Image (cartoon, rainbow, N blue to C red; front, side, top):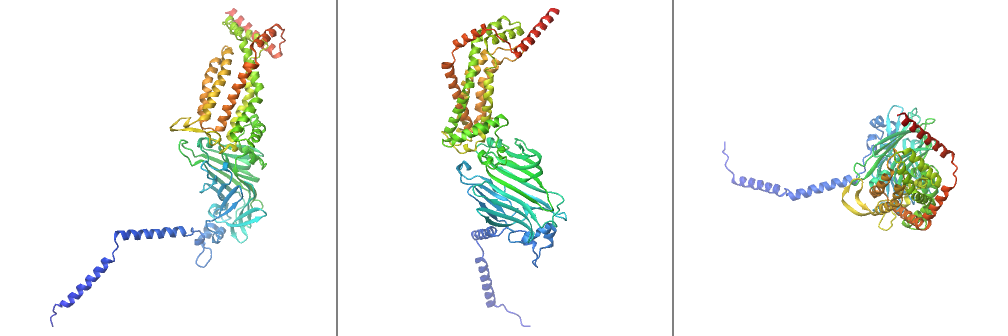
Length: 629
């Protein structure tokens, strides 16, 4: 065998080839920077695909390779799997709009996914943005259906087929959840010009053999209420769930804690966000309904996105195997004039007070303020409104001050009686009452005018927080008369007071201090202390200081319109009383009149006679008891 010799040429050739290969492998390696750039490119391509890709729908999985509905989809959705095979089975929205309202209705669930209040400046937030009652999935609307084979279908998870048409000037949108070409559940929306109220209906067609109609289907409606106003505390106080039931009665859920309730024969449900409201009304009353309000404000010292979470559940009854409910939906301001025009008792959404307080607001405050604000700036309108109310009440103020003047004239004689019978309280009371009777003075006359004025004062506490017209209206340093008028932001939070200083409450507190000093102070000095009763004089003196402090604390976060009203009201009252004291009431004439009244024989009324006899009997019984001892 021939021995192989070392071939230098072959070795050199192999080495060159190996070297070339190694160089090519090295030159093709990416640098770290190149690797990073490549990764960024791949990530960008991936994100671009995820953005441009249509949201996957059930339709892509419900159709098998033969083009038929898959058994899995039928097993899950039954006949409703048909709706997932239609071109409308994708997450898109249809817009309904007029000059007041813009709505977006989603294919998925067929419900209103966005509701925006348009145009008016007062319909905007302080930031200038339009108010959106519904946005970013803060609302839900779902109808739970049960099929004959026991499947539970939630409409919020399925796709409706939209069809937008016109009827005259009205826009009509039908949303159909189909089980076949002519078998469907339909939501029908009709929006009209210059209207915050929609026509809305729910009906079924051809589903008698699909649905179990032996029991009602539950309609679930909910809203997570956005904060729209400057003061979350103030707004949340007037954010509430209101419902009408049992032929016109109304009730509400509004508390710091969570609350639930039920009612029968419900005709409307409203989710009120202080100045804006969503309402669902029905022509066919819901036989029963359950409501829940969850408070979402854990700490009102911090910025809060939401105030309350409202939910309502109303069973819908089948008739002749079908659903057929004609309803309405309202998305708009909680404005008295706007709501009353619908003649559906929606004015009950506005807290005007019960009984006489509500009557004062409806028949005096609202018409008068509406008239003034029609041609005057709102701040000036509040001042003129207050002047007119106080001038109308001035005769009552006069009666009150006249009674105080009479009591002041009798004060020396009352003090003399008190000293003479200091050891006999019963006798002291008898003699004091006899003096009042002879002089023709009623010690309660000063209280009665105050009681008459009280309903007007309470009505104002209901009127101003509900006055939508004041929203976003400025006056002097207050940029919004429906909210507080902060002049100084504090770097800390004072319990009950807040983290800012409002000026109108300070002015109102000063005015009420001087008003009470003029009235309560005199009454405290003149009112005789009754045996066994608290010293009212001391209590009244304390109230002179407590009332302004309470005004200062609690009104700091209230609407500045109410504080302005109270400031002007007390200022005018002080002025009226100074005029009465200095130019109308003459104490010398009053004294002369009292002396003349004393000389005249007095005829006792039945009440006075009865009281005198009771006191005489008590005095006789007391004397008898002392004699026995």
